[in-house]
Image (cartoon, rainbow, N blue to C red):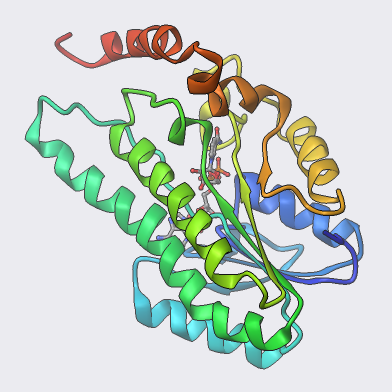
Length: 246
Ligand SMILES: NC(=O)c1ccc[n+]([C@@H]2O[C@H](COP(=O)([O-])OP(=O)(O)OC[C@H]3O[C@@H](n4cnc5c(N)ncnc54)[C@H](OP(=O)(O)O)[C@@H]3O)[C@@H](O)[C@H]2O)c1
């Protein structure tokens, strides 16, 4: 995929990986719009307010973006929350509902809002965002893993449904990256810049791979195939000891 001369909307681009990727597209010579609930966090890029849990907000943001940028040809669905849950405490349900509303339904709503435009353009890209945790669960974040496994399955079906339309569908599968507080709790989290170097190299390949899997994500993406799944899941389950009362 070309990273220059594109018109790119990154929904969930007001911080972290999304903002970093937005700056990479901008540095490559593309026009970039970032979207999120709090656009005051960004002062170096054009931005638009969106809450992906609210269908009206998504439709409004779509109208604003397409009125100003009828040549929009890349949409990235980056919005996500990463919440811990104790499944022995029924109060986890609120976190579960928020996670599905943002990560899974928010992705679906955003794609629905822009797909007719992207098909009409004829040559466009949708980039969805999952996680290594969608392939190898992290038991402290059960609904998070479920939401990302859901986005993976949805992405596969979307790619099949859009085949022949000129719209390419690519799944970005980050491992732990040092954003959103990960840098404080996970010493293995990748520095954002190094992660983005790998991501932009992989995205630039022609043809673009269906899945963008940086080196550190491969052991998660392929654990089941590699026969390491049970062992890695057991190791990741140790984190449950950090829950109160365990
Ligand atoms: N960091 C990691 O280790 C890691 C690993 C694997 C996958 N990922 C995925 O990568 C993506 C970005 O994560 P990050 O680490 O960069 O976290 P982040 O800095 O917290 O970014 C999350 C983005 O989602 C937006 N967002 C949250 N709720 C929203 C809502 N209701 N409506 C619209 N936008 C919303 C936030 O913007 P506002 O707050 O302005 O709304 C922000 O722009 C997420 O999908 C995450 O699951 C991250």
